[in-house]
Image (cartoon, rainbow, N blue to C red; front, top):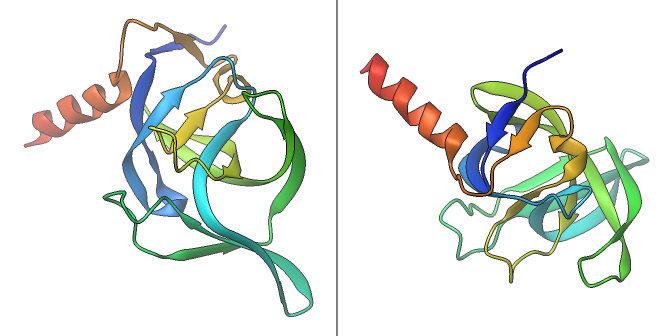
Amino acid sequence: MKKKLTIGRKDKGDLPDLDLKNIDLKIDTGAYTSAIHCRKIAIKIVDGKEVLTFTLLDPSHNQYDEKEFSTDDFTEKRIKSSFGSSEKRYIIKTTIRLFAIRYKIELSLSERGEMRFPILIGRKFLMGRFIINPSKYDLSYKLKLSKRKKTE
């Protein structure tokens, strides 16, 4: 049986495919899917193929750079919000680095501008990998910092 890592109620992680480092994450066992805050979400036709385009984060965020991302590897899914309403969202596949380990993750693209955390990590990603300790925070990020200090 694979040992599960302990993660706290919030942390910081890297999304290397999306050029994001030390991005704030909220661990949310109430959410099934994981989500990332995006803007300007649109479908474009490129060479006869549907391509999903989006911009990450808000201009007020310190990592916002107006960069437009695009992918043809996406799906659409109905997702129930915390308010109980259902909405259609696009889902992308990418990687996330936590505890110096790269994991595959599916993220729904969502307008989360009014939320404190740009990324929400849901149960689908957490199950089988992590034990959540709500009294802790930034465990992956603290490990990253301690490893960095050892190499200096």
